[in-house]
Image 1 (cartoon, rainbow, N blue to C red):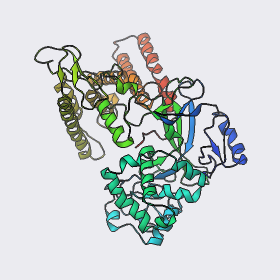
Image 2 (cartoon, helix red, strand yellow):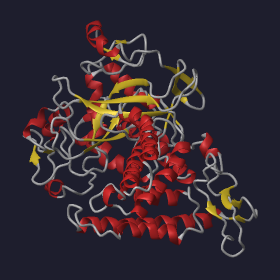
Image 3 (cartoon, rainbow, N blue to C red):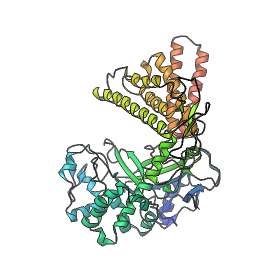
Image 4 (cartoon, rainbow, N blue to C red):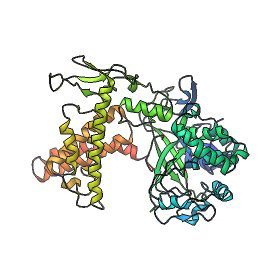
Length: 545
């Protein structure tokens, strides 16, 4: 049996629910105690399967509707990212000067209270015994991304062995791809900075671990961990915490660039654990048939195929061959396509798509004139466009920063991005990924930040926001369909925009109250799917790091 943490006390388990098989317990007593809460969710929803291509993975055990809870899982390990700004090792919130030093080991904490955090207790004694305090540099460079924390989360993985044999067996059975990673620059650094530090300095080489075991934990984290951001429940006014966390059962959900599940995180506090347990809940985003593979995405839906596959190969050590990756048109969106280079000179209205999207150096071919160009030409153009977007976005962000708390922002700021779309209107069709990226940023500006509230937008700008919402939803409906956070946010934006347009129509007497009421009713319908998603939102979702 795959042993996870008890959902009640987080202790080692010997039982799990025989109905849904997604919740684990240490005893019959805790199972009975949790039943009043769990019985509303308890359904046989998934089963563990095995295949040569996917390895261990989860499939639907019955027909599932969109929005069903598949499983809830307590994180087995939580800790800072390898390159992290200065954080509290107890609650993981980012720290601002002056940082408090742990009375035991001397590493930064937000307060002396966090020395008792279950996250920090075991490592604290090791660091204290070895006499390894945090350097003055770490305390001084509070806002910098430093490698000083790179050993922390791998160490916490190794210390699971001391706490629970079953949990250790579960953790140690996860895929690491460490053999493929050993020659990479990151693992050369891990060997020097993580393995030697944990093994020699902290003394774990004498505790049954060797270099391979330590590097394997690094590989398990890189392959399976999720990046999570939240405000620590113990300190509701604290700064954001950014961690990576391992959920062994959830990590067996297979990847697909068009997933059928979504997940949320929450920090539970039952009084016994002041720092809260980090819990992931996984929901279906679309209907799933019995026997169908349950999937999540390990990358970004609004990236084109070449970028997604490169990220997955580097970070997760596999080459994706899902339906979207195999389709040159990316499910009919032509998300990565650019208008034919002959569009301006020869009048061709075709799109350049890859002959073989699974081949990194594949030629690209026009859908109309059949002209072929080398991948290097497309890479060069995409790189140029990407860099220009970043440059324009940095100008917008700089202006935001210059205005302190984002007051009195010049109303021309969005034009920096709008100019990009005008400049490349002949090269980029409406659903091209560069165009969508800029449109997404514009949608975040119009009506959402000080200086550009919805009610003060010009009629032209508010119609522009409505147009942006429709175009973004057109892409989201295909690339990330169903009850997803992306669609929910866009639907809410469209609903609020439609309401504002209706209000203006009434006040200007351009439409009758009857027709405006129909508009309002249509706007309310936009909320239905969004509310289904938001009803399950706790503290947001993320993707595997």
